[in-house]
Image (tube, helix red, strand yellow):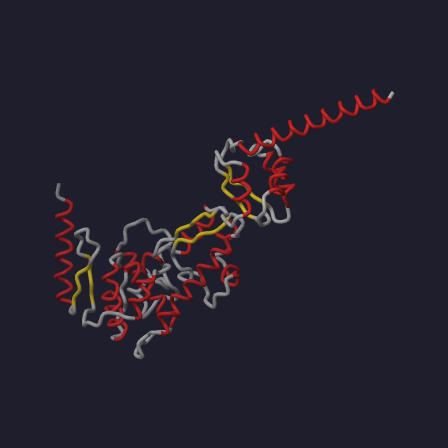
Length: 336
């Protein structure tokens, strides 16, 4: 009887040893495996290692949640982070674990060019997957949500490239845009010349007009100087971009009828500045308004030669000559 007992015990020991050895071999093989696919994998806050391992196995990234949990226990380090991580094909389980313990969450970017209008900013938010935010930006709700003390968010969101994680809401990006505009505006406001005649918001309005008038950064102080000269003489700004902004059905061609149609934004018809900015100006345009080029110029017209620059004039007669040059250049451009 004793011999049978010891024999069975030996069999169990051998079997157990073999099982352990087999399991260890499988674990060693697991460590050498590589992720077969690239995925953006989200670790939800509060999941823990067990839930994360289950989801990695369910997504086909790993073939053993149990072995991943064992790897986590055997590998000293910080706890898993919440967020979305880029798991790349070919990564080993250890590399995946290290990625999920890091702060290398997936980031996306969204770009708003200088001179973009609020309507197009809202469109970009919708395209980024934040339709409710995009809609709200055009309403008083958006103004209140961002804490802006103006009737509209037009011009109040700074144009730039912003980075965000997949877990962040669109409002986070919108808030960054609003804060950045206030920072840029206040920096220039603090350095303004003593004789600067406009308020901070009026300066932003004028900067938006300067932004739309020229794409040539070097010209913006000169353009701003012309507008200040006209304002000082109680002359209307007569800025085509303001007219265009006030046209609901603008189709790309400004007409005499447009110039004669009274809207709150038609600076051929109204005195002074428009009631709000007409776009989101960049830093160069804002700086130009606080530091305009001093001159006697009262007029400017495009050269029409593709340079994007303008001809400036101090008198109507000189301006009319420049307009003739512009029209002649356009005719020249049309010739085959």
